[in-house]
Length: 174
Length: 240
Image (tube, rainbow over all chains, first blue to last red; front, side, top):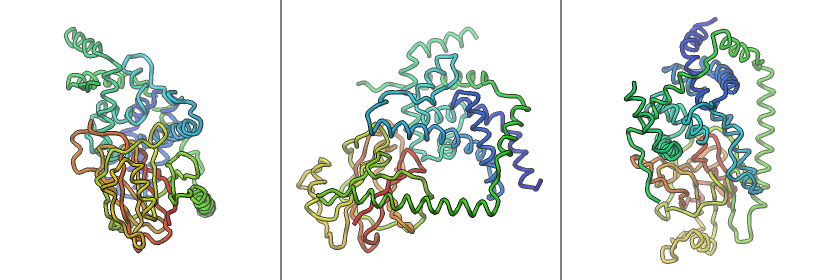
């Protein structure tokens, strides 16, 4: 293996668990996460040798997030096409919304559009700055801000005041 | 409706709960992850001959798509002389992906400050684009957009063309559009505001009116409008 291949393998091995976790948090389904990580591996491997990668972690994360978004975007575009042409499907959830079940938050995340879900995962789970999240999602910083704002409002409305109360109780118990 | 307050406490609780959710992720073991990489390795990598074939197929597809777009745009041209198209909405529209044309920024005369426009039909992400080539049509389009007749701009249509763009789902209310001249089209895209400190100010679709010089665009020309919600997608319309 050449030097580029070696550096890619080292970076991938170091970050692949975190990358899989990001994919799972966004899509919520282990099989889909597998597909996304596998595709991101191939895509980023091809790109690795073609340019100088200054931040391997950010580069790989971007590949995973883009792959997840692309798959949802394709599904969403098909759905929007139907809605525009026939009016059918208004208010329907896309079949791709399969975030892990088990908690109120997971269910609330599932009800967010994929773009908002991704920005929440990156900003509040991955602790990415607005600029880094923008880079990972290939969108502007302004779009990150607006999506974050909309997602937080939706989550707060969905989870209700009980979410904060539960957290306070657990903090006290802990 | 009252604005919902999202407090720092909520954000902190969200971080805590997301951390828990992340910890509960059923991360596969090394053997499984190795297998995923093997799946990727199993995909045939195109050799030089295959790449040439792929490039040929891609070129053919692009030519066909271009012809279809031109035919669609011609069909779309209505009797009032206005070209109308919608991103992603059928009716002869193209929604496609391509590299962003890198070219010089065209001088564009803003005819009005961008304003909150009427939402194009469709639930989200729709873009309405008009290419206006005469004064009478401009008056109709201007009124249709809710602009007062008293502010109708003067345009020399012998040398200029007017472009109206209404975009939904624009983040942080972009005050202006930027037009770039690519090899095959003029690409319009919203310019991100320098400051976006108040994302709650985002307010639905925004409408822009610009006058471009025929000498800069060429006549006829293809206008592409970048989808603000999808960096890889744009709508395309033939003008002139």
